[in-house]
Length: 330
Ligand code: PMP
Image 1 (cartoon, rainbow, N blue to C red):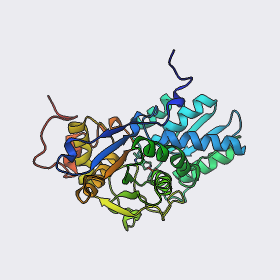
Image 2 (tube, protein in one colour):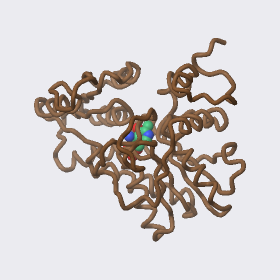
Image 3 (tube, rainbow, N blue to C red):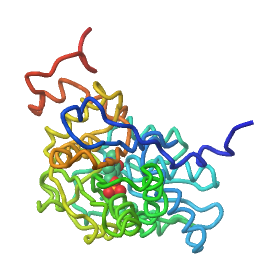
């Protein structure tokens, strides 16, 4: 019989898929690492598993404990999956701007969700930050993974994503491209690939225009999960050879093309990373092998990136856009 003991055993070992239509006029081989095929639907399953197991080893998380994290999305799902497997409770704190659908996903996995007002200052007692800190001090046996400062976040990529890419490409990868949020993916994977290739593999970060990684101040942008207005300790400033800033418009255009032309229904940060990979590919040769990591799936964004009305309201739909999408009356 062929089966795994628990769905958590399926985290990692995601496949590489060649991008065809989008790279038609380009010379290098461009491969996508498809992270939505993780059991929780995103790359964050990797960090959830490693952060929890490290906290068990260090004694910070004890049997029957409660995981408390300010998160509304992918990290919450990963943590909820791992918590279920290991018998922990989960309390996630999210601002009220987070859609009800996203909150319901976390509840569906059995987590408790505490909603805080978005329109208060960070120092206000009801702010997202203060509420999660208060819950950690009030709930007995509570532990906060803190993905922005937890070294196990980049370490999970150093030990899983990096070695997978080296093996899958038989050491032929020349460039690794990923979006930067906490910086865990790019720092851990990038450091592994640089070490094993003795510096040959180039590491390229993709960043929303306006975010700190590409020299901005944190000016608002619409692509979710990437870019920051501060420098998290999980980001290793020494690992990127280059950061390519990408506009929301380009991120969303490529996101939609990935679904329509490549059959990859993925999130907006995937389009951003792929847009950076395509820019890079324009200056690469036929010997080059570019891998771009696509962090999550597109179903969580049907009312945004894949909705024509939403796209039009921000002026994103280009005149050559055609075909039906969510929200159209058919
Ligand atoms: N895309 C999405 C959708 C994410 O949730 C995240 C994580 N914040 C990223 C990209 C960036 O990954 P990392 O935090 O490892 O830099």
